[in-house]
Length: 202
Image 1 (cartoon, helix red, strand yellow):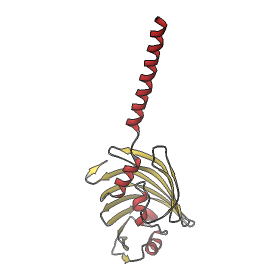
Image 2 (cartoon, rainbow, N blue to C red; image 1 turned 60 degrees about the vertical axis):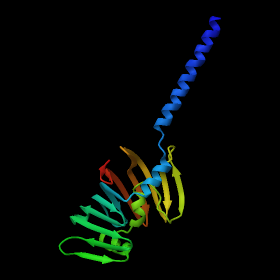
Image 3 (cartoon, one colour; image 1 turned 180 degrees about the vertical axis):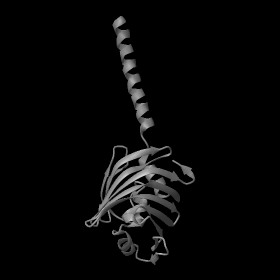
Image 4 (cartoon, one colour; image 1 turned 90 degrees about the vertical axis):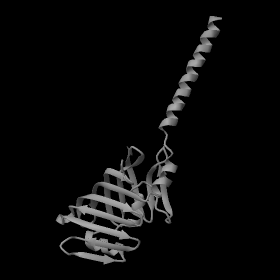
């Protein structure tokens, strides 16, 4: 009789541990697919961080402040090439780059103007999704690798390769903190120091 009670007690202990571990796993697992759909549809966010740029001809680092509001993106790049602050405003296919002191250019060819002013070009309309850790809509993904929790680890899209080296839990969202972007003879490292989603800092 004691042996039966001992066996029953042991089984109950094992079951309790398994159920407890299962419960912990459920709490820690985040719905990455749901997050991705939500993030892609965000109308307003702000990213503050740093970039390190490497091209065949040059290499430099700068601070980055990126405000996305509906159809408009405004980027402030501070410190590259000893230029101070460069303001970039993109709305649809219209881009405006202001280097200060009245040096302002507007173009409907974002790639060409970025190349002229910053020494490299990158698809900002796609990058606005990539920095959130989601693929850009309307572009086929040539290659994709996910972390166990479903978040992007590697993405190749529109001839650009992205490696998401680190994510961080910013309270309400898990967002990229360190991303390596490569394409068109460009290597760009993005480090996110702070995210603001809507009117709430995260």
